[in-house]
Length: 372
Image (cartoon, rainbow, N blue to C red; front, side, top):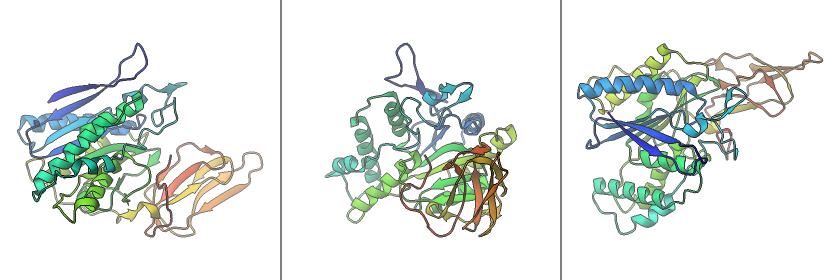
């Protein structure tokens, strides 16, 4: 293993912040796998999964079983990890600006396309390297004006040339689920099976410019622009993995999730060995635009009436909001048949607060498909 320390510029005077990337298997491999954890820095389960992955990758490296370079960033957001307010971590948003750390990553297709003019050939492997080189150049050309943009640039530079990109997160309270692009789904489906994902949410463009989408959607744009004239490779298998809820931090679950990821990498041939038989997929993939998102119509005490991972029917009560002064109960029912895959952890709500989400087979939303 080789550790590479990427120092972040523009942090506060008198302080230092860095992103540590641990490289396994050597940089001379034909393929590259990139895994990062806790870009939302208060999503602790992902970090524990990463620590278990590190131990297992060290063993695989010692056994010479890695057929790809694996880059592991166990703490993808040191900036957010240092944000605390009255004893509570605040790692989802940059406190100074309110920006979500996993939104609005640089989408540099036009800059990449301009650099590709005159470089592409009839050699698909060479074209892959041309795209990656142009992408790196575009990232380096982009001005870095503050610590937030420096963090984004650092992570993008580490991941833009990978064949598999896994961004490990969690939700407030949730069952295991994943987000990925429509075109990534056939290659990502075995990962969903090994993880036991109870919801697999697909979108070509969620409108959020999240980290995983900055990889897959940019490649899709490149293929759309140049694919009719030049042979273009498939883009990376880029997936956001949601390791249940923030309180789901156990060695047993972290080990199981790390083993599932390694089984997937064995399945893809990036680890030498025989992968375990593919488990059944608990529920079929659904469009992210099909998820029903519930919001509180009034303030009060929140009572959950649907279990995580439960299959919800149309018309089924899923949330009650109880007025603590009058005892009046407002009940929200589902308009969608699907899986309750995430829900709110705080049990008092104000009007407009998000409550939870249920998967749906038919698209019903447009625009920004992810939450803030």
